Length: 344
Image 1: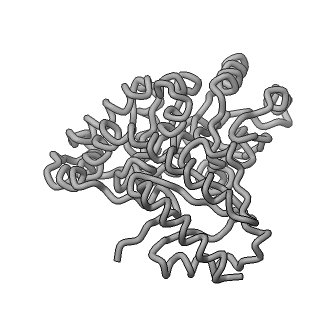
Image 2: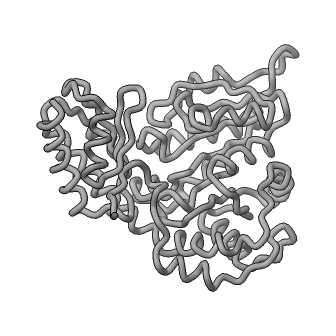
């Protein structure tokens, strides 16, 4: 049974070329630095984002957390957005793994209020924790993309206060596609960056952490400490190379399909889509005015061979990706139309 899966862009299946690359990958023990395919991926990834070195990790959460652990001392304070992935969706890992304190800032689609950021940077008072790190995020979990102007302002302030900046760039290439810039135009405003190979780019697993050679050397030890020392990881790195080299251009098509989906859904009575927030491949909307039970809607779609998630705090999200075509979008919209009639 073939499903249209709108739950996330993490659900993408590897392409046939990726599967063949997995089969043929040259591998070695990566803990010893012997895996040629991992080495090639890390070198290519670092160059792509304008950093000195890079490291392959199992997931985006792992990448963010190993970065926090490497940047910070226990007891440090990390400044980040109140709606960021690190704050909301990483299971309190920063406290559990690194012993740091998270202090939130208002974030409008990932953009910080600069005056608030300045006010929350810690001074030298003996009672205060040190500000160990500032974390930004693009594309933001809201689907919006912070402006380069805002990112530059944050980075400049961080440098003035001798604080490092980490970028959660899980969907970094979506952000670059939306802004229509080279990815290095974004990553020049951070000291380290994590980005996913498995969100929208179709690699089956893995993320990259990039930064200076000194940082990555220290991060490798923390990766090992966290259980992320992989052995013949070239089987995972091979599809990651294809993801970075061949799949990034397809993100623009995903964005186009998301825009089409949002515009069509917005035509239904009781369905409210904020079209201004459709900047990448995510469509957020609410259906409160329809009085439809969310689980009934999820079940209805499943019977029609479409997988969707329920709501989070009253908001639903559909996500387009490589395996969702324009034809699929029209089928989803027709299914939604049928649901509105059947479930009232």
